[in-house]
Figure 1 (cartoon, rainbow, N blue to C red):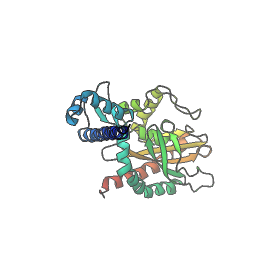
Figure 2: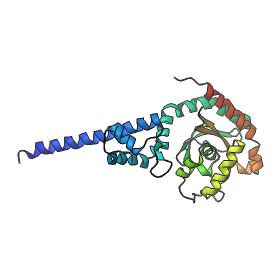
Figure 3: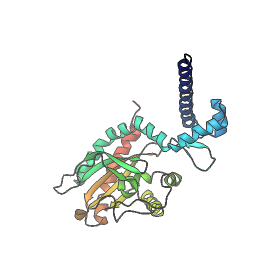
Figure 4: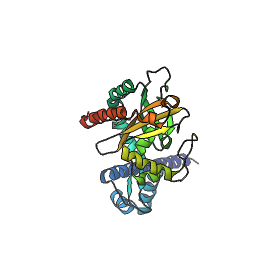
Length: 270
């Protein structure tokens, strides 16, 4: 009986050591994939000095959490959206908010309508900045609101900056949620609309995310073309009258987007 406590303590310490080794190996795999942009199970096992089964288990766990992704079964592991999101949170999101504010205010002043800045989070968007419109009847402040990306102009503009393989990974099912009767309800429809967004440089929304609200948006991208955020103008649909009334806002939207893009191109590392 006297030896059970020390033996139990040794077993607990051993288990804790194994967990720390697994954590360390998982972090090392993330570093390797980030450096190489692609990593196979055999390469991971060799670089870590572990069995292939161990490397496969760690890589699979990271893939399930979206830190890694595969473009085909048994293919090489590549950086996933969660890994990109961490990097964006560390270096881009704070920057894009600061950089975009003057252009966002310029957009509100030019249109007198509510202008917002939104970021992509998986298949959702989150509004992180907003200048409320100047008109008596206007769309309210949107900061903190979360919407389905496929049902919003900001979301569609950001999704259009992704390639089709990434879109299919994010939307594995053909059927899409429909917050309103006007929302796109299939992945096929979404891919078709995103192709149009890419051609015209902006995305439209007519009561797709909220009844009574219409909007137009354009994506802001980093120097490599990856989406950082989107700026949008939202207007009560009763005032816009038709989708043509929303398109009237496009020139001011694109002007502000280009102003912000210029700031992004000229920004210097801190």
